[in-house]
Structure formats: C-alpha cells, structure tokens
Image (tube, rainbow, N blue to C red; front, side, top):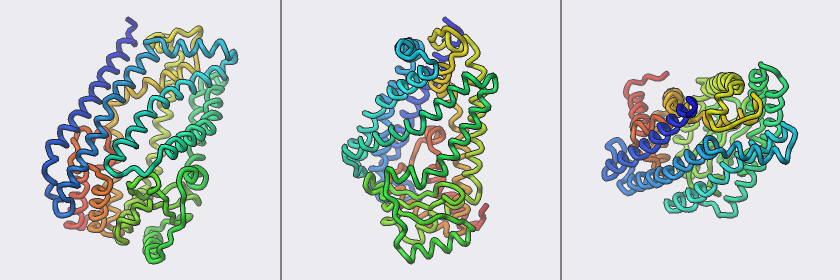
Length: 422
C-alpha cells in the first residue's frame, strides 16, 4: 500500500470516528440535562420549551450520522475506489480540450455531491423543522430555491473555475499567487453585489416602516459612527419562524437587515441591543479581520496545492493514475475533497477566534445599549429558535461559532456587575 494512501485512510477513519463520537456525546449531554432548566434561565424559559430545544437539537444531530458515514464512503469511492479516475476517462472521451475536460469533471463531482445532500436537506426542512413548528416552506419553494442556488452557482462559479484552470496550466510555477489575487477580487466583488443583487433573488427586502424604532436605531448608528445604505426588513417568515439580524456589504453598499420574525418578537430596546452587538463586529473590525484571515489561509492552501500537484505520490496515493504531472483539474478536485479530512481537528481554533469576537461584540453592545436588554433578547432568541441551553462543551468547541448560552449570559451579567467593557 502506498504510504500516502495509508495516511489518508487513517486520517479519514480518525476524522469520521471523532465526528460520530462528538455527535453521540452531544446527544448524551443534552439528554442528561433535559429534565431541568438551567438555573440562569429558569425564570424566563419553562421546562416544556427547554425540552423542545433538547429534542429539536438531538433530532438534527441524529440526522448527521448517516451524512457523516455517507460522506466518508463516497470519498473512498471517488478516491481509492477509482471513481474520479473513471469520471476523468468518461469525460476525456468527449472533451479533448484539457480546460473543458477539467470543467465538466469538476462540475460533475460538484453535482453529485449536491444531489446527495438534497434528501438530507429535504428531510431536515419538511420533517424536523416541520415537526418543531419552524418550517414555512412548501416543496415548490424548496425546489425553486435549489434551482436558483445552482443556477447562480454555475453563473458565478463557471467563469471563476475556467480562469483558475487556465492559470494552473498557463501561468507557470507562480500560478497559485495569481489565482489568489483573482480569488480575493472575486470575494470582494461578491461582498459588494450581494446586498443589492443576490440576496433579493431569495427574499424580499423592505425599508423599515416603524418610525419610532427607526429613530431609535438611527440614533444608535450615529452614536456608533456607522453609515449604512438603509434599514431593511427581510421576509424570513416565508421560509422559517427562526429570527436573526445582520449587516452586509461594505463601503456604500452596507445595509442593516432585520428578519421580520425578530421584529415581531423583541421589544424596541432589545432590538437596539441586538443591533449594537452586530455593530460591535463592525467597530472591532471583526469583519475585516476575518476577511484578512480567510485570504491568508487561502493563500497558504493554494501554495500547498501548488506543491502537491507536482508530486506523483499525491495522485497515486489517492487512487488516481494520471498520464502526466501536473494534472490540474484532478489536483484541484483531490485537494478540496481530502483537505477537510486533514483539517477537521483544527476546527476548534476557528471557534476560539469566533467566540472571542462574539464576546467583544457583546461587550460593545453593553457599552452602547444595555447588557440587560441584550440578555433578554438572547433568551427570547434561544427560546424562539429552540437553541439548546446545555450543549456538550467539546461538541460545541468544534461546531459552534458562538459561545454556549450559559457562558454568554454569564459574561454579560458580569459586565452588568462590574461595569467593565472592552
């Protein structure tokens, strides 16, 4: 057996087993605390709501079991099982040009992976979300959204992929750097056009009509030194009863968006606190920091890919025999298929950074609005979204970008007590 084959196989086994183990831990931990509301929330959330959140979370986690196993099995079939090699030969008989061959090879794999995900998404929406009272979608809306997503993905992704493959073939040893520049430009372009051109394809955005709330928010924006292109309400209730708020875009395209479900549930001062939290991400430059970090990581990954695509053992170790090295499209496919296997155990590092930013945004919200209002808003959102109050700490460290409810609320209460903000 090739050495890299053994390394990959062992890494896949470890990653898959850890994912299954974390899911089992999560369910056991939530079930163990299902019969009692945590003391910090007992005054606001009753036992039935707490148990609903526990059951809802466990149902979603149970659905992950077949997904984890199917993904691992499919990855083995595509790599060591010869699936990619067969697909490459199939398309080679129909497309002699290397660029077009690479395009259809990659798109066929993406289509296969997307098709396998559809039944899980459908079950999640029309069984789990429906059972717990969150789903508002119809099957027609579900499949219409899918068609729009795939069409948009093809429209935006095909030109980008064509440019990347051309650079990999024609730009010499430094292709990875030129590709990185293109990738940065593409992402900044998406950030700029998303608010006005992409988001409206899936939801309706209307200017905020509540004059008193609008005045309150505008005062907060002025106080925080934030300029936006407008305050908008999104018709999230057409698809789900979950609520949220966010700001998107940059420069003159920045806009603040509230889900209509959130506005219907929270009081004005609570909405202000939630928005102050989102503004905290802006004021603490979290968005810019995350973009910079993302670009730095992508540069590293492209550099690694640039090295690996020149190594015959990289292809052979993953069950692919190529006529010549480098094999650009095949290298790109293999790299992005197997990369998660080798990086999964690093996920807590991303969570640590994200949670640090959430704490800082909460602290900013407490300084510009009210920590008490922020707590009340969070508790309502936890209840309305059936977010578990008792996640397994280790599972949360891998998968949750936000701190667990108890830790986050305790942090805000400490701010109320000490008056310390960052």
